[in-house]
Length: 340
Ligand code: FA5
Image (cartoon, rainbow, N blue to C red; front, top):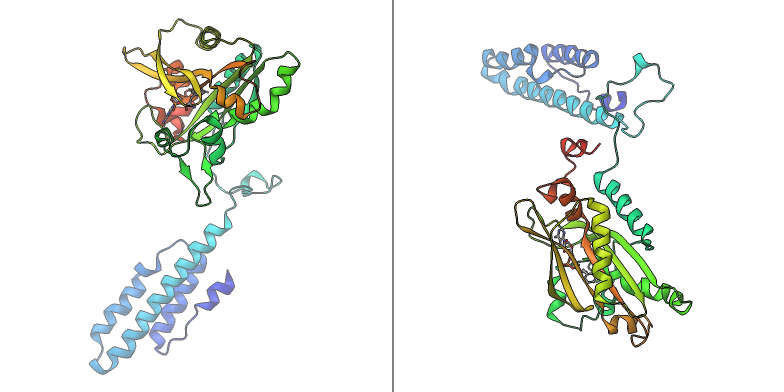
C-alpha cells in the first residue's frame, strides 16, 4: 500500500499548493474513505487562480490540476487495494478474536435447492420400483444426440431440438435420451442372464428456447429405459402411473395422445391437468424403436422395451403449484426459502 502511495507523490513548486498536498495526503492516510476532491482546501486553491495576475495563472492552474489528479489517483488506488484485501472464501482466520473480525453481513444457514431435494425423492421411488439410477452428461456428440436415436441424417426432426453446439461440433444435450445407447450397450449382458434392463437417467438439458412460464433454456429431465421380453404399451403406462401416484400422493387427471419421436414407435405425449383446467405437457414416451435396439447390439426380434423422458422441473412445479419455471433457476432467495 505504501509503495502504491509513493508512486503518486508529486513535487509542487508553488509553496501554497505543496502545503495543501501534504495536508491532504496526511488526511488521506488517516481517513482513507474521505473524498479529497471535495475538500475545502482544494476548492480554495481553485478559487485562488482567479485572483492571480494573468501571467501567473497558467503555471499555478496547471499545478492545482496536477494535485487534483494526484488525489484522484490516490482514491482509486485505495479502492483497488481495499477490494483485493477481501477474500470471501476465507475472510478471517478462525482463531481471530470476535472483536477483530471484519464486519460481515449476517447470514442464515443455507439449505439444499428444492430441485435436488425432489430429485432424491424421485430417484428413491424408481429405485424401489427396480430401476437403477444413472447420471447424464452435460456435453455430448452428434451420434448420441441424433444418430443412435434413429434420426436420419438431415431429417427435419433434428431441428425440433434447438441445440447449443460448440465450435468443435460438440452438443449440449437437449434431452437425456442421449444416454439411451450407452445404457443399452452397457446392460445388454443382463438380458442374456434373464434380467431386464431397467434404468433411470437424470440430468440437465439445454435448449435454445423462447422462454416463458413453462419453458427454460436449462432444465432437468428424468429418462426411463426398460427392456425385456414382450414389453407392451400397457407396461409403460402402468409404470408411469405407479410413479406419478407415488410422487404426488394424490389423484391427478392425465391425458395421453399419440405423438412422433424417431426413437420410439408408437410414441405418446403425456400431459397433466393443472388447477386452472389447462394441460401441462410433462412426458414424451413410447416403445423403443427396433433400430435403436439394433444400434446398441440388442436383437429387436427377441427383446422389446419402453422409454420415457419427463420434464423434471415441470413435475416439481405441479407438486408445489409453482406458476413460473424460471423461479427455479433464478437464485431468488425469498423463493428458495419457502422450501426450507
Ligand atoms: C424429449 O425430450 C424426448 N427425449 C422424450 C422421450 C424420451 C420420448 C424417451 C420417448 C422416449 P420433449 O422434447 O417432448 O421430448 O421433452 C420431454 C419433456 O421435457 C416435456 O414433456 C416437458 O415436460 C419437458 N420440457 C421440454 N422442453 C422444456 C423446456 N424448454 N423447459 C422445461 N421443460 C421442458
